[in-house]
Length: 82
Image 1 (cartoon, rainbow, N blue to C red):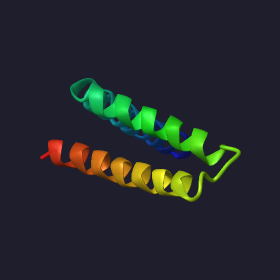
Image 2 (cartoon, rainbow, N blue to C red):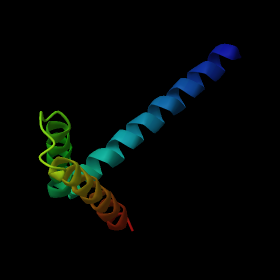
Image 3 (cartoon, helix red, strand yellow):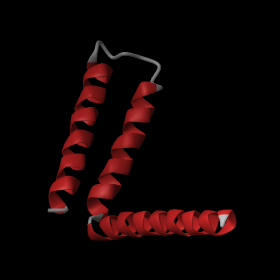
Image 4 (cartoon, one colour):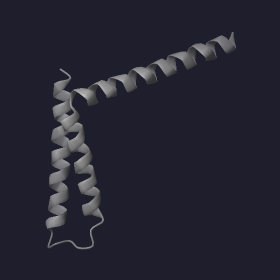
């Protein structure tokens, strides 16, 4: 009985994982521009975080604006789900 319970658990876990991946892929396919923008913003933020200069505070402000843009894109995707 223990083996069958483990098997059922494994099947349910894999099914949940597959459904999650499918939902993620579906969302990505429906909104490729938003996902591309998220990736570009993440790359830009990383580049700025590793910049050698502060540029009189403008680097920090730019990073804050990127954070705001990322939040807006997240909200945009959430609103598209409704």
